[in-house]
Length: 374
Image (cartoon, rainbow, N blue to C red; front, side):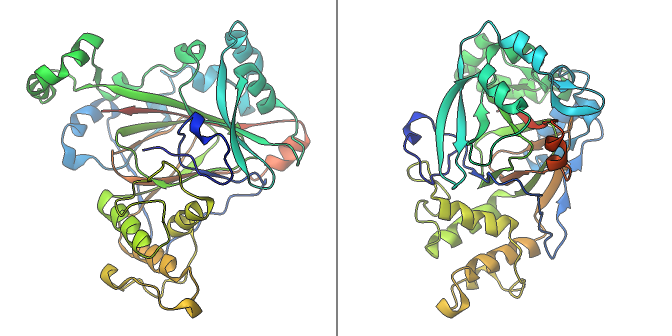
């Protein structure tokens, strides 16, 4: 389930957005290295046959697809940006030509310099103006298009990637008959002569300025996910369902996540800012790994003198020592597969020269697109 972090939100009833914490301060990204190396995402040797592998639930692990897999088939990777010198700079005239006849608005996450967040709506053309502005005043809000389907006029540039992975998308007629023909469909999906059939649950477009680091704290989704990086880079950490469940159960028992139940379900759909910070430290934090050999049943607070983050450091150390952490950096044109139920956290990677580029009036963006399917 996707949720929006509650810091100070007056209008969270408008939309349940993805759980995330936004940092409006321009700074270079620092990525913590665990004491035990994270596993790389496996690269599927022949992406066009990925669907046949996917039919075996036991084989569903985090997977990465190199840029040649989708670059020839997703026009947005080239038409939306200005090659070759600034491949992460938006092609504003082209995008305006698509959006100029539309008056539709998109919901945007708004972050104030003091960290307070809200949701607002603007025409997509106005958001393009924000993304392409040479600079943003430090006191101005930061805007982020997050987890919202792309406007219809952009859909031709963002076709489904699934045919290039060996899937067949169910027709509307087939979908309406799924409950009556599930066994038949399963048999067909297991046939080597017919591509596995799937439903696309929903899609989301993510866009922000490169100087505004975005961060999605640890969470899980109920559907499988193909995540494509349109521009710049993001780093992803993933842990399997049982380990993630244990993390949430332990944090809940220790009183660190009062908004959740032991399974990680958010009762009102929202985490507090403090709780999202807990999740951030657990999955990304840099701790002394004194407890990495301690069994999970012995995780507990060791007194206030140890500091309230002690349980968090123990959990972080256990995650590290488990050998079950997957990590990858997704560059422009690359994509990843995240299985349903796997816990993951995502950060944009700030370019080292982002401040220099903006001082020269060159504004770059971080863009991603994902498709949830089942």
